[in-house]
Length: 195
Image (cartoon, rainbow, N blue to C red; front, side, top):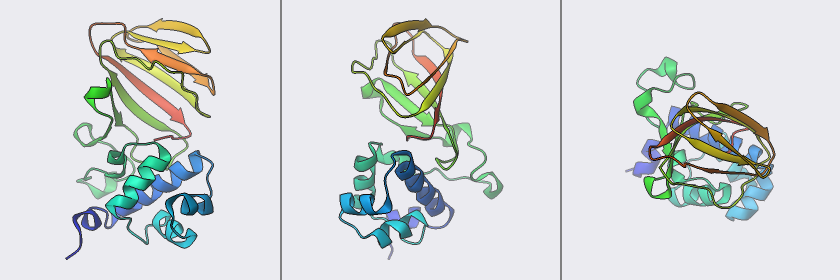
């Protein structure tokens, strides 16, 4: 009997997984050989995973998640009830959730997959949550504050944003915090995809 993980990743879901792994590898500028070396696997196996020809085990998925710095939950797509919507539409109740409420940040992937030139994420920042250490990614990023208060520091300058405000930056160091008493909801666009 196939394992539950193998059943989960058969067919269209396996193609989504393959595309996500390929997109994450490319976004991080890694070659198949580098991934194989870091995972202790052959280049051929990594290539087969990226083409949807081999199904990684749960421990392989954990290794990919650790290598790419993403939560393992990213690799589990939700069912798409209408096949014509796969890769095109993400219904509100079927988003992939990233993060936990304990971290103060819960994100949902609004993009159907990571195969495009950008990703769109709905980020919910708990009151008082903050990124204390500067982050910097080789990406262009933009955000729209859907609700709440949201502070973002870009290259050492803090900006207080409220509902309806937006921002954009590219390759600059940034930090964030929610100074309010209510959750802040930000729609975040990142190019290329990093989740």
